[in-house]
Image (cartoon, rainbow, N blue to C red):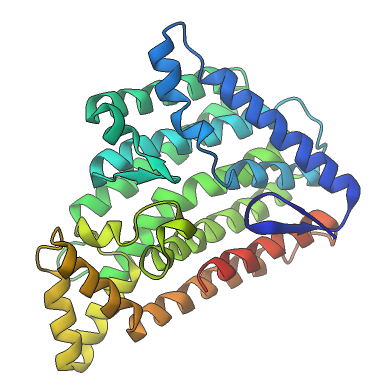
Length: 336
C-alpha cells in the first residue's frame, strides 16, 4: 500500500499511483507557469499561495476521474490547472472578505500586501484560468462558466443570509453546494470528460463531486472550531471572529430555539457579541468545542460523505473507484 495526495490517501495499484503522481507533478508545473508574469511583483503575489502548498484536492479528483477513460488525454492536466487556479483565486477574495490573517500557514495576501493587491491578484488568476480554458473547447468553457456562476451565487447568498422563513441550515447547505460543491463537481466532470469517459460515467462522477465538496467544506467547518492552527493551516475560530455562522453555530442556534436551555442561549449570546476580544473569542471556542452542536456538525459531514460514496455505486469496480471511496473516508476522518 502506498500513499499519495491529500489526507494520506492510500493507492494500492502501482500503475494508478504512478499516473496520479505524474499528473499532480505536471499540475504543479502548470500552476507555476500560469502564475508567471512579466511583472515580478505580480508573479510573487500570484505564486504566494501556490508555493504555500495545499492539498491539491481538486487536481487529485481530476486525475482519479480521468482513470475512467484515457488518463493520458491532453486536456486532463490543463483542466486540473484551471480548477486549482479558480480555487486559489477564490481564496484571495475570501481572505479579503473575511479579513483573514493566515492562509495555509503563511500570512494571507491581504495581510502582506493589502486588500487591493489581494483582490486584483485573484482577478489575475481568474484571467489566467480563462486563457487555459479557452484552449479546452467551448463545452469546457460552458461547464466552467456555469460552475463559476454557482460559486459566485453561493457567495452572494451567504452574504445576504436566508430569506424570512427559510431554515438557516438548509440555506447554508445550499450556499455550500454553490461555493464549494460546484468546483469540486467540475473537477470530477473535467477529469472524466477530458478522458473521453462515457457520459453516464461523467454524470455519476459529477454527482459524487458535488456531495464530496459539501462534505469537505463541512469538515473544514468542524476543523475551524475543533483544531489548532497547526492542523488547519489558519487561525482557529476565524469564522467565529468575523461573525460567520458555519454549521456548528447554526446547529447550536437550532438547538437553543428548540429546547430553550439556558446554557445554549448563553452561548448563543456570547457568539453574537464582539468576538474581536481575545478572551471572549477563546471562551466561545471552548464552549463550542464542548457542545453537542459540534458533534451534530460531524454527523452532517458523515452524511454527505456517505451520499458521495453511494453515488459511485453505478461505476465498475476498479482501483480508481476504491480511491474515490477512500477519499470519502478521509474527509470524514478530517472532521474527527
